[in-house]
Image (cartoon, rainbow, N blue to C red; front, side, top):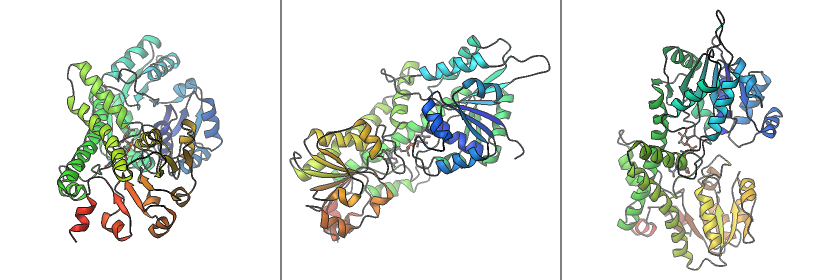
Length: 451
Ligand code: UGA
């Protein structure tokens, strides 16, 4: 490749690692940095710290080609790279604000290693925020670096937010809908556009504050769409309408769009919940109470409570009932259980005395680390999990669940009841197969009666 550049990425979590592997795949020379020695050792040995389809293959391929390397030393990356990404975690702090401790520490460390430019020898560097941060963080990063770096260090701060989706992270990084670059100088814009020139995606160049805001505003908008459709689903249940039809009916209007209109048990994961909270917090701090976002959060919380009530409505007393729980991760094709709605439901069912047989294609091991309970059995097969159960609850829409053999399932269950939190089946088909089937916003009886 003609324009291959030297890139350092600090923080080798989901975002850092995927970004590193994808930039290397595009021909750039990338060093991924993390202060967790065990993680770096694993990556060097060709083992993954997270499950993400195709990531291992991409990492191995580019590691072998020597376009992707790993280290624990920030100094190594800072010295050689033209673009230094900060991709560390910005978790939710106790007050609802984003906790920027790691970001500040990394900024300081970068500053200490920034080489001074001399006459005839420029060491211009770009320090790019990849981590999701509240608007105006760039100003603080810049001030921090200025404070700790040599006065002769030459650098620009850039905001280059990440829009990858877990489970399809490689595709959403290599073929993004858009790339957003927030800059303060034409020089920085030129370097960043060069870095992404082979991605074939529209590049939106803005100021830093706008780029930071775009990230929070995007995730909050997606969360709002999900809460909107979940509120619609609740109205559909009361009005005996079908949320699938309603979502299709509104979503085919191009101004609204069909995606992120799947009703269910609410959004989870590491990003949407924390970003909605952090966005509401920064808006309030700036002097604008963004009450719409509080309502989005309330609907989301409520959706889980309503779902557990739906299970209770069907089974009456949960104590000593055997319930099969399908799905533990916050969405399919990932082993990520952070803020997973499935986990919240699991905890609630256990608290109500139910006996749970849980199955997830990838994330049982993650859940085992945080949850052990005498009434909870982890199963390594869907049908084993369903054995002797009074009710099967679907909490994550893994493709495997959509393909399950209904006849076989019916044979192994004590009662053929399915409560589906992700609307993966057609109610009429389930009725024909002899199941009592409850889902979200699709009144089963009414649809069946219409026939
Ligand atoms: C989200 C955004 O979609 C990405 O664009 C962003 O880059 C990322 O956060 C981030 O900030 O890093 P992700 O957390 O991977 O990506 O998950 P989503 O695909 O957005 O799903 C979030 C949750 O919403 C899941 O629990 C999912 O099951 C739920 N969801 C999604 C619904 O309930 N209904 C839908 O229609 C869509």
